Image (cartoon, rainbow, N blue to C red; front, side):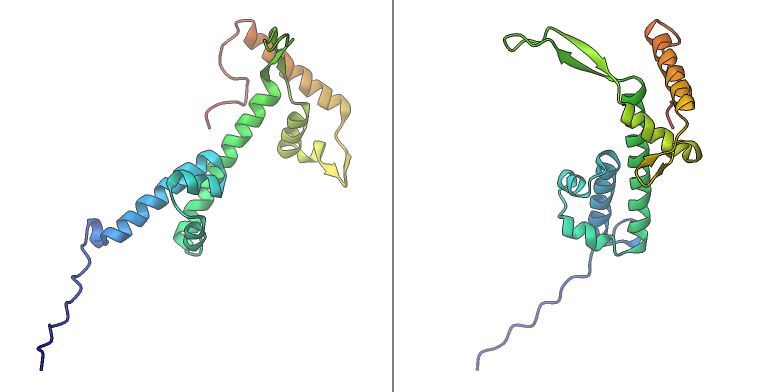
Length: 172
């Protein structure tokens, strides 16, 4: 009768910092990479792609309370970033190329987003600018006054004013 080899035991999982296994540490690093990407992109699939993590894995992580809290904080950061970008486009505008001739742009013009401005006002001052069933109920005179103030601030900045962001627009 042939002699059987003794069964090999799996070695105990190696422990790193704070008694966590290397697999746990690797998972934590992947979660941090995902959350960093998510706070910049506000896209679960896009952040998963950047962090090289399957979206299915992210959904499994979201079932855990601790990760869900971190995810919600990252979503909050991303929301603030998107709000700042909307404010910039509404108040400072964006340059777009115009006057195309034979594939060449003849110049640029600054374009502002009135729709973004109205949405920002609705979010910040809903009692004045809220939308009731598709019917806007903001006070037109107040909206025009706000818009004039924002445009004067923009003109001051372009004319060599303080060079800083308009009032209420800062880091944070």
